[in-house]
Image 1 (cartoon, rainbow, N blue to C red):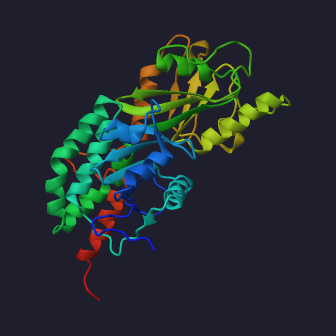
Image 2: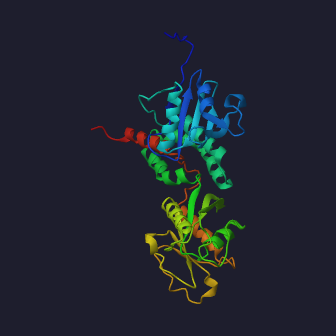
Image 3: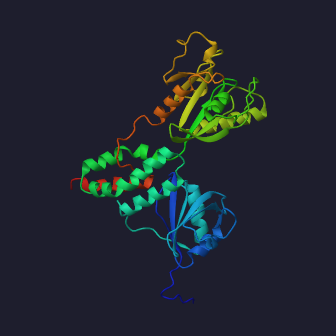
Length: 354
């Protein structure tokens, strides 16, 4: 029988974020051998061992899945694994930790509204901020969240004001996926290039040039986004083009914003392929005289990618469609799904007893 000294704390782990799919998941790993367990599963960028880096924030990948994630050192015995919030990613991490002897702990009771935990989330998100606008908003939250948490403990109106901005607060700091779709040769690649300011996609007069999903990270009106230029949607017997069209449909299905691009000189119904775009862009509008025939339920923007006209209008519409309502100055914002869950749990204290 193995005798464990009283001061020896066996490695254990606990999921800190709510159960279910989320953007980010956090797993705390603690104990004397916690660093050995993490070392066996995690490879930092640069291939050095995690224990040799002595850094508070370490970026790398989880060995069994290859997924990129972040490990935070809170102390010599306490660490946090911050990964993608999918259930598959969480299950893989937990399985590896259990295999190496760490025991999972299930909290007996969730304690909501921890100002310290809210500030910890802000600190992590600030480290990941990719634009000045998102960083400024997060820094504002760093200053106002602790006092806001104290106020809503006893004020139903403050709580509801907080929760009203849940969708905006949990999205603005995450890169939003914008997909350009439409028929071949409508100008999707040209439009992508002119927004980015350089030639990310190959442009030719030959329909079907784009065979894969081309993505690039940028910012629109200060909001981080990922632009995706997809293969033209049409019936094709070409096997490679069919693969590109399949990928395009998958990208469209998971998009935060769908932009349908139409060739003004050869218009096709934007409703085709059962795709309901958020914005309709009529490209090559410099080559036509009439615009009244281009009507849709979604906002319609007329542009010319080759002449770089209408692009500012398009960027403005994209920003307004992504975030139609902006919070007033100094408005506290829930920044993660876990924070929203905390706030919803705290609402129970305001409910009248039955």
